[in-house]
Length: 549
Image (cartoon, rainbow, N blue to C red):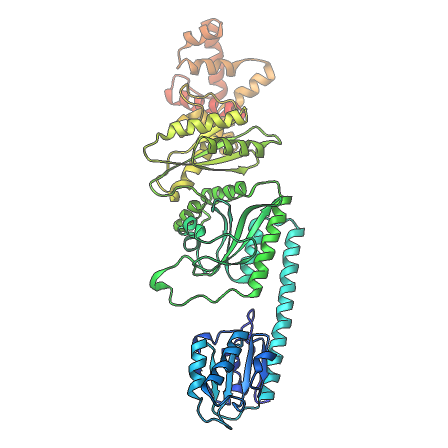
């Protein structure tokens, strides 16, 4: 053999162009006379023929090698010869210009051009038997490699299914195996999960619903739509639930930035997508959480923790879930439900109730007992009224729920700040905290000194401050059964008015005077000092917070 065989790129069959590039063929100085645009056709086999009717021995996909000896002399016979090759699906016709011809006959060139059949001439003598040996070795090797790769795909998805992988894990594996972007969407064309490959979520999900609706549905894996998506249905209990789509890395781009058509999807891509759809169908049956809920949870966590690659990616992902992102005001709401086994049910009920009322929002669990809500409101809609609706609905779904809200965010990039603000309000608002008379939820404006200290109650500096200021009085009360702390509290609550403190405690003024002198002696403090009274009052508030009040 003249030269070492070089297989085509892994993952696709050998093409006419690949064969022409092999040293054993390249030595014959090949030239593509017609059908240059079709040299990417796959070559299934090589067939040497000197028959006038070779098509009767072909099945399609063959590279036909001939010296030209059997070609008919008349133009009509040449056309029939080419028509039969084209009709059976031959990959290309290769003619050696050494024996009968030294230039391709015009009738042959015209017939091949008319039928779109690649015609390749060889200016030098080529050993056809050696060509078949080299190409067949490559084809069989590629087939064996493809079988091994397909087996690895099956094994990988079987392992994912057996370990109960999440849908996102399944799509990530599909994107890694295929090198293509993979998207899971539901029946109303909301993109629930997107795993980009060679692109960004912003590019992939741009104008998603319109592009998806222009891609027809299919009852089996196949290429559909103007962008050539490879799609496969995903079912749930025998009914269509949605579909999974495989896109080229440049999908979503248009105009001059797209300089060439992407390569077609191959058989291995189809296998990957089919196994993806099967794994998702099984996961849908075995995992109780609806994927819409999981998609909302992931989106909320990504927004709250700023885990998106870019603001544009965040916009694209949220828009693909069906939420408006332009000319929209966002408000983060946290609903802390009582601990129990029905938190997920409360989450589902809250989502259903908000959907039924026409409220546009993402709803999802952010923690075992915390439900997050991201409201998407028109700028003209009063946001407090919308939060009030969410709050009352949450309490109806799970009595005892505490609801806190952040201030509005004018853009998705500012949503994380709204969530942080709501979380700080929640930290400062323990169960049973009184609400303002005009609403059923807490805001940052509700956080006074007591709630601030309650939020900071685990800080050792707060604990040390309370102990340093009041520890000796607490110790004295514990040893002697006195009520010095209560007297101090009454005195400070009365703004330093001893008479009012005595009246409130139901004791004489002399008793209050005596107890306060004892407090001053124990603490080394002057209770006539406004500054020192303030310090002690803060210490009492900190003590209350430490005791869970």
